[in-house]
Image 1 (spheres, rainbow, N blue to C red):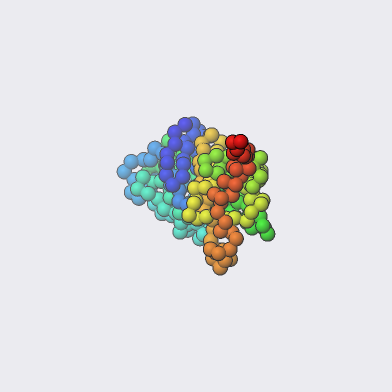
Image 2 (image 1 turned 90 degrees about the horizontal axis):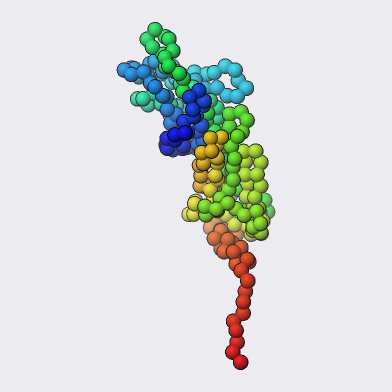
Amino acid sequence: MSCLYLTCTICTAEKGEASSVVVRDGGDVTLPCEKVINDQDKCYGTTWLFSRSGNKAAVALFEYGKIKTGSKSKSHRLNVTENCSLVIKKVTDEDVGRYTCRQFDKSGRQQGSESVVDVSVVTMNKQRNNDKMTLTCSVSTNGHCSHTVKWLYDGKRVDKDNTDMKTSQSECSAAVTFVHSPFNVSSKNPELFKCEVTDRGAQVQQFPFKPQSSGNDAATSPTNVWETSLMTTMNRTEQKSETHIPPHKCS
């Protein structure tokens, strides 16, 4: 399996299988079209199709050298490069699905095999409930979810025995809840927490948590209790596991 690193990771599957792309919401992604016919004028012989699980009919996104304007919420975010790759900007859940690239000669006959890419989207949220805060990372996929999701702190999986943080997992989703102290994940330390996603091809990607700004946060920061240092809490957790040995007194 070979991987092409762009704003996300594209894993090329074996012949006849769909490639897998996992991208964070709000990010951009470029989907390659393989074995493009040479000497095309504005990719006139290239067609990009989009379909979702459960929908039999595929929708044309790009055809005869032009972006189709059928979807107003999507067409303005699409672009096709000189090598006929499809660019999707500011990805949302609406973009989850299967993308198929086909090549046609001047007579209209399809040439070669088609390129198929499944796009999944990662979404992260922060929720507060009294003195608790929960970070949630979920993956929206095309059809049945075969991805695994987990939270990492400083490159390590959050320990289930941790008394300050509790983790939970479900299909294509993972959450970590801070149970003792109301503290936030500082935007100055985006690398403290990462959501790790492993796709069906065992390709691993890590997405740093970036808290979404809101009016309430802006009105109360930086003096409220949510500005408690995350590192301080983690240090306190580590100190709990240490045994205190009093100094020896000489008689």
